[in-house]
Length: 283
Image (cartoon, rainbow, N blue to C red):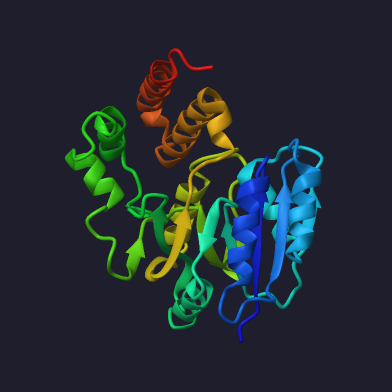
């Protein structure tokens, strides 16, 4: 069996963490997998440690909040050299009994793959379009402008690829809520860019995977349930602003030619204004 480990990054995640770890331990053939829980200096470190130890997971308590990418890096750094694949997941996810094995099987028969993503089901049983196309300026603006008021607009549909969730295929990027990464390629790419505190680190990783000539492979036969962003819900305003900041970071780096400076200025002003608009009245 290929050596697999699991890394999850927690932040005030005690309740969700219990369900996640229980689901990992119920996985067919992977009940004894090495699991690392990384806490990003949250207020629930003691409670999270108790949950982790109850499920036989190792606990890493960071002295500061390093964001999702930084937390993942800290967890991966503790793994043994023989680990070939790492399941990177939010703690508010529950994996079905065969999901890990299905992702590993897909990886072993896809030598050109670097990242493998499952079908993600939300709390209502609906499929979340987690295997998306990389955002361009056109689709990004269209999705940002109309995504909330007109979900079926052509830009959002093209970006989210929500009509193509049933077949195994390559994607521009895969949701970082739950990913199986081939460790050597993840390391070769430098892992997640820690410049993204939260949001878009998975989009950025997907772009770099493609640029390196590898594949982001969507595997819908592996299924997980994602209950929602429990930790971010406590500070919606801050997270909305972080999302827009990360969107600018990604797009400005993607369109970084000197002669595109006016475009980057428009993006910065537009995203800043949009962040203020969507967070009006929020705390």
